Image (cartoon, rainbow, N blue to C red; front, top):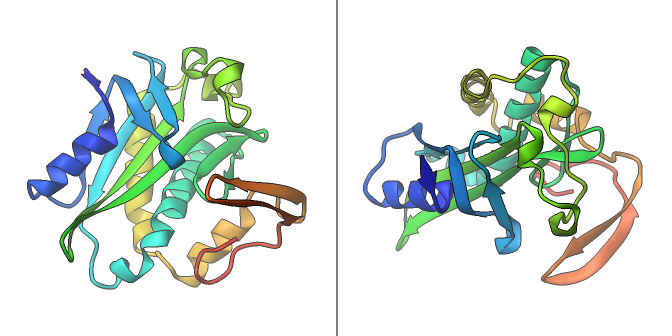
Length: 216
């Protein structure tokens, strides 16, 4: 019903030997985390907040940076299939609808010494208006699915679709079809952007696409 962070809970499960495709899902999340430890609060009944634990194969471990776009592709495809929405993937880890953030992704590898005990795919989706944070707390303009859909959103049907799509795209991880789809749905392609990173000086340039390592 209520948890601090589904990712933190999933990391604990991973430490305890959780099986591949174990799922942590919460109705309310009080200390959700994004990149650079940004807060992500999930109010009861307003959003979809879950973390999926995967046990990567040796080959998948060489492609860990591709799991965030894997989640982005899975979510984008599900939104199109179920709601007819044409979302875009904002590098490196957001999904946008009409250039506003509707979902965030946080992927964390869990290590015990030199041994990986799993990888956690954390996904938060704004479903209803109650999920949108006040403007002063938004790092990027935000929206929710019900603002763009003519039909109500069944959160558990949405979850099922995302999980099925993650399983489908996982088979294509790093394949040409994976990169082709990522390029096709990449937000701001061909446009001037400013990349802000708390660790580095801001970078200004034009988005050309994604390289074979998953870098912008």
